[in-house]
View 1 (cartoon, rainbow, N blue to C red):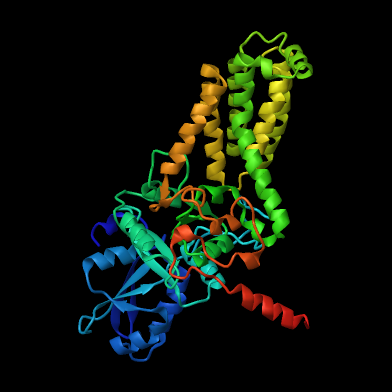
View 2: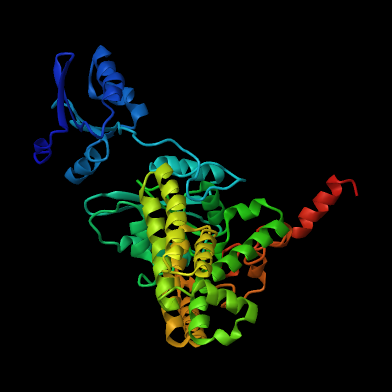
Length: 479
């Protein structure tokens, strides 16, 4: 209390009620003062006989509680409580009532994971709203929420959500243990929690999925995963996950299975093109020009006839330019950023070709590689693809296709060694599982996806009975 007096937003309000003085202590920046006056001060002044019992009965709806310890006082005052100090003859002199001021944006459409089908709601920065969005989609008592406080200074509230009858208890214990071991001053966002909990923090590949969509979070929790929601963050963390899930969009489940399968295979092809297109250009022109068809070879030579640099230099120049345009577009306001990305790319690309700094063929390849990288639904994996491309380009300059092959083997070995909450990152490819392949690179009909993913080792592997669904459908159709 003494330390708080030095803060300009710490308020001491004294009111005389029925010939006795009552004091109210709170932080004006955290408390709704209008609610304090309308629902606490004025109603208490209107009571004919103000005693401890009358005040408790009147304030029962506000969940008032007696003060027990000094640590509780500090914690509650800094989270939006008001300390009410009554008469000395009362059994409990000090009482705490929650009157937290609610500030924040309203629920809006997803900005990063926008989709044509499905829900148009996204998480916001207020943890209570996010929990409401999750519970609305999973209205079951089986949904469990574990509350933790992280950050010595920020005192950030973190919730761990899971289905008790479905989730693997080892995964829950792993999450709670890692969150309990986090020692940090301030937690500004769920991304900080993610970095502190990853199995391999040195890896460029993300081992958690962060999503702003409540429907995806609810579906993942129902499937046996764990969701981590952080106060002040509009992203939920999902774990354990696999590498395949980073190229699958939640919108796929709303499409027919042939359309969803086509889009997933298209994204997979786009991912490989984004990584290997530019490195193959450098490797082929530097070491293996004989594999280029004669008609295409003449076109390539004509496009590079005035370029004074080797392929590696012009490739790094264009790739770096594209990354600078991306970063500039992301940091500028939306309308200006879009203009910079389009106009800047056209102007710089055209000028670079006319100045002889690069060939028009490589310009097309780099532009397509940048375009295909945007097909990855999860932003963190898209960033990873952008980073991984550069080691492949440099490797292509060393030994050509041999170096690209060795780099690919290194990346695959690294992916095979990764885990997410101790679960294999490359499942169901390694360890191999036919059953889980039904919803990976291809998405088979929903009636064939009767089981939850095997690598999660859930308590209830089966989601529904196929025979029951088919027989009921046949009855409804009159057969």
